[in-house]
Structure formats: C-alpha cells, structure tokens
Image (cartoon, rainbow, N blue to C red; front, side, top):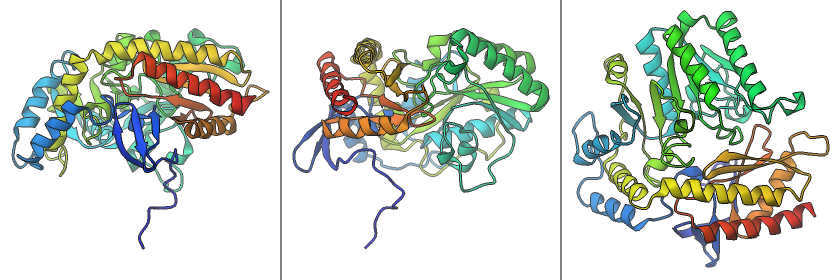
Length: 420
C-alpha cells in the first residue's frame, strides 16, 4: 500500500477533519487552537465564508484556464486589485504557485534585467526548497544538504540579528553596523558590484527565527543598490498581506524594492504566488522566460480576490498589529518567570519565543519539548530558528483578543509543566 515519505514529519499529531477560524477539529471531535495557520497561509482563518463562497462559485464556472493560453476574468480582476495594495511603481505582475517559484522567478528576472550573475543573500534567510531557492537559503542546512552542487553565483552576507550576536555584547545598532560593513566587504572581495544582480532579503527572518530587520539596515541596502545599479528584491512570502501588522513587512522600514515576492497569505490556502516589479524592470525578462501550467489558477485568483476583500472589510491588518502586541507582551510576561526563555521576537502576528540553555546557547531540545507539550494541551505551534531554538506563534489574522488570551493561558500551563 502506498504511503507518504517517511521523511515528511508532522509538526503536530492532529489529523484534521475540518477547520473554522482559528480552530481545527480532529477525528475524535477535539478542538485545537491553531496558531500555525498552515505556516502563515490561512490569514483569514480556516474556511472563511466569503472565501469559500468565492471559490465554490468559481469552480462552477472555470477551474483552470492556463493564462498564457487564454485569459480569465479572476486574473484580470486580481491584477487590478493588487495595484491598490502594492508599493507605488510595482505595476507589473507575474504569477506562479509557491514561494519557491516566486524566488526563482525573481532570481531569473534580476539576472536577465541586469545581465549580471550574482545574488547576495543574508544569513538566516529562507527562500524555498527547489534547487535555486535552496541555494539562496541559509536558515538551516536541512534545506540544502545532500543534493550538491547547488547553484553558483550566490554570496552570503550577515543579517543584523542581535540574537545571534548577543555573545559579543552587541545591540541592534552594533549588529547593523557589522552587517553593513560586511556587505561592503562582500562587494569588495567576493562579488564585484558590476557582477551583482540583486540583494535578496526578508523583512523579518522567517525560518531564521522571526528576527526583524531595521530601518537603517534597509536604508543601507537601498543606498548601495542604487549606487551600483543592483536590484533590491524583498521576499514578502511570509510577511505580506498584513502578517506583521502592516500590509507589507517592508513598510516598517520605509523601503521599496525593485522586485517584490509574495505568496502564502494571498489566497487563504489556495496555491498562488508571484512577483511584482516596475514595467521597466519586468520588460527586461527574456521572451519565453515566464510561464507555467498552473500559475494564476482561476479558483485561486477568485479566492485571492475574496481574501483581499476580507482583509480590508474586517480591518485585519490593524487587528494583526493589536493582537500581535497583546500576544508578544503576554509571552514576554510569562517568559520572565523562566531562565530558559532568552527572548521574544517578531512583528505583528509572527512572534517567536527563543529558548537557551544554562550557558546561553540555543536550546533546540527545550524548544521541541515545549512545542510537543503545547500541542498535547490543545495549542498548535511551530518551531523555527537556525538551531530550532524558537517556538513560533503565527495565528490567522482574524484571531480575537479572547483567543489570544486562551493561547497565552495554554502556553503558561505548558511552560509550567515542561520547565517546572
């Protein structure tokens, strides 16, 4: 009998029968508070009625219309609707299915638009699992080990991660000084600016631990990109569509990219992703270089349109900011009781709790134990961090004040049982 690969490890023991809002229900009828949201995908919650209605209606009209063969109305409407939320000037779109595909599309466009081979990425970033996307990923070796050689032309520069540099006694400002100096050194010693197509960076490290960048760091990237004719690519796959308490994570730092990636929260669980750029940049893609069988699927586009309406009508970006502050403050207050809790990171509704051992080193074992116990107590979470030392909270943007309080109560109970 066929079965799933043994390497597909479930993060929680739940076999879900259905979901509603921030809850999942299993085969025994147990209700679980889901603070994973399908890794940040179901931003409007499980099975939001408006999204369900839009998808069901579209299924009865047109399921698949390959968009380099024929055009369909949901795609035209989604393209127009996105123009109202994308940064000014990013007015040309290419659609695909996953974050990895968006990363590869951005990479290909940057190289073709500039005629340059190299991409500078930043330590701790995650951009996908396909060969090129994994070559751009440095949040953990598990994403890139065992199938070398990886793609060439990738150079890694530091991200201003104060959690990583705490043993040096550095704060955010010192970590930022170091990151920008090292980037200059990279351009001097490893990737000549004339060979550098793009900088690729997340506003908040996702798999890397929910570590936000900062305004000075992004200003430094923008300044160097402009000086050398390098394109700035911002990966908004996990941070976009309200997740950080602003519509785009980059808004926290006052920066606009040349190419922007998006996916995850755009369609409440339907697979769709893409990149946005100016028409000037996008027109430099080589003929035939953009395409794909399932990109901009008609049902996914209809779901994305409904998702955008729900985000606006229910003020979910503002809710993410408010509930995110409630969640982070609550986690910090609980964490102060335990020496193993090193810090609480994140923006909006992407928050992580970092664990360390008695020597202050990253403690992935404690993180795993707490994560497992939380699931047993009815709170579904994920882990992240370069050493697996963080437990992350990433609920749907529809989460209420009461539901955040419920999660905090379960978390407090869980820490008491695991940490004593």
